[in-house]
Image 1 (cartoon, helix red, strand yellow):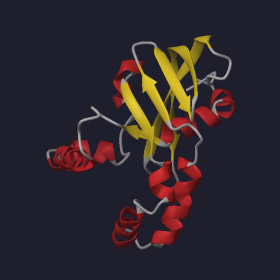
Image 2 (cartoon, rainbow, N blue to C red):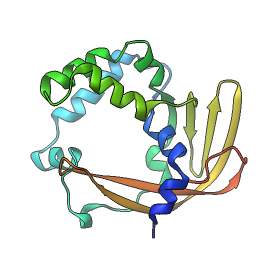
Image 3 (cartoon, rainbow, N blue to C red):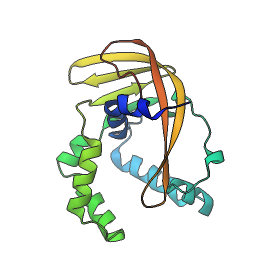
Image 4 (cartoon, rainbow, N blue to C red):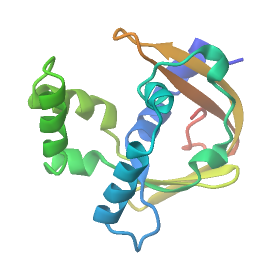
Length: 173
């Protein structure tokens, strides 16, 4: 079972994962990815939307395999820094007046900040890229922790422990 101390040990690894987004096949355009993402959300049932928004019961959370995140992922942090995401923060501020666009940006900057530009997740291995540096590790499932947020919604951290690999690779993801 996942212990809270694992999260403390792996804060850098969690930051990496929270600040990366799927690249998808390199031939896909950003516009095509946006269309597919939007289409997915339009086809959600009311119950699926509630779960997506973080409102679910413990028994609904199932263990996950690393392959659920399989693929080539890149950091969104450069897009936050260069202003590409500014319209997203403006939209969030229009929908939820509790914060301004600038406050949203500052909040996301904290969570998205990373020096890892890319990760590639395979069957059991994760490859990390930091500029010209490359390191990797093999990981196995180590449990989950359900998080309760102040707003009343919830999240889930699925934890994977490194079983072998480069020393620079995070111990926990």
